[in-house]
Image: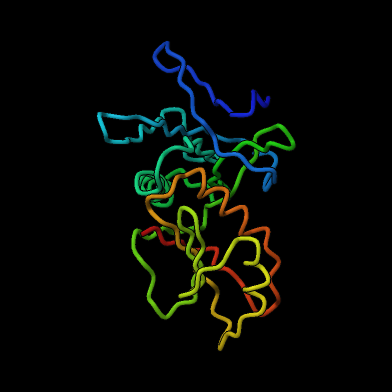
Length: 210
């Protein structure tokens, strides 16, 4: 799929009108290609001062890989509840369930000049704060917090690897519900790029949005 400009516009035809989605961007490719997929679109809408998400999944097939094309301007407080609904629908399917079918977020790779994807099939989202005793990495609009300490992105890898931990409990990822979906994708790619020592890990199966 072609890279259209500095800002990716993902365009489809809906009821005879062109619709566009501004995808998040990154200079890293997590997954380069997804076969046998169905697209799901989440559009940015406004109604007065309110921001809304319009979900179009009419072309999705339950047995295929799902690619979620979500506008980067939408806040997580609106995006994640819709993602939870979609996930649960697929997880609860019995008659036509395909155990190999995955779910992916799409984004624009600004280096490779193509579409790229992040799998999130196994992630269970919770719209709440985690228990205070759990080791956690929290992403806000313009800062990162590790447990109770604020750490810059530039030193996060070294900070984590030099931490003293009493056990091997994985870090839980937490995200500010008011941050944008675009920053969420960039932070997910960033945290996956960090090289942790053997005693440290990140929980890939749950994320908290609060």
